[in-house]
Length: 311
Image (cartoon, rainbow, N blue to C red; front, side, top):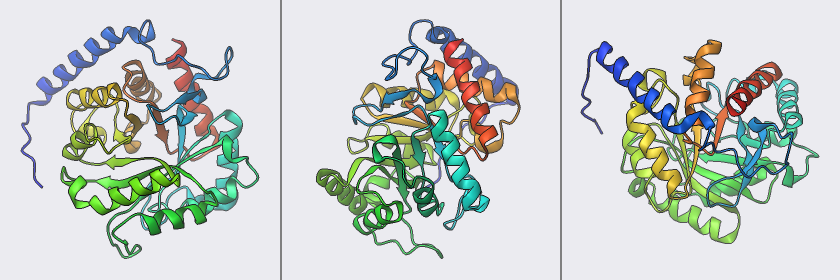
């Protein structure tokens, strides 16, 4: 599906974005009055970045920061799995020690068995797992057309009885509810049986995102969000995406932010801080997933998030 996009000059576009960001940050009071930092599970001294919060209306409690496992992921491989099992285990264990209890994986990344091994011996109630079904047949994947076979396999690969969140991966058009109706129906059945706690989609298209943010089936929306826009891997401009995410959250849906650092395009400390500040101070997400690749990156991200919450 092709969308008609209206283009503006760079000067006009940059000026509009600056005005929009300035206005929304001012309206949010930079956490002075509307900050989403309430309901700490641990009281005084809790690390804001890894504070356990309730995700929307799902009842699922997870850390605000999730450990992504799919940087440059494709064909059941990712930069995370390519670290090797030893380094992957050290990464996950370091995150757990720092309070990251939210694990983001997918069939596409091939990270299920790595995560299973890294979490061996950790009590199940100490972590939350999100995974994603790749709905299309590829050289590496023969899609069943539904979700039952996939979720059963995921649970075996992860050695868990219940998958906390299951998403249909990488929606690229607004017709996904019809195109993947069988997957939706089977995920709903699995949710009713208790094999899955919450369902939804990850979006890589603005039309898909618009539908996801309003469709009654979606509990969880995994959305690309930062303070820059399409130039940093978002589905549309900041001005277009922000109202959708706010609407979704107002309706009780869970919004998990991804591409906070623009899929590697926002690399400087100033760019990272600005994006984190924008996303959190405007109440756009319940949690964020970031594909940190080393203990040092975990520590740095936690420190940057904490600065935002305590500013």
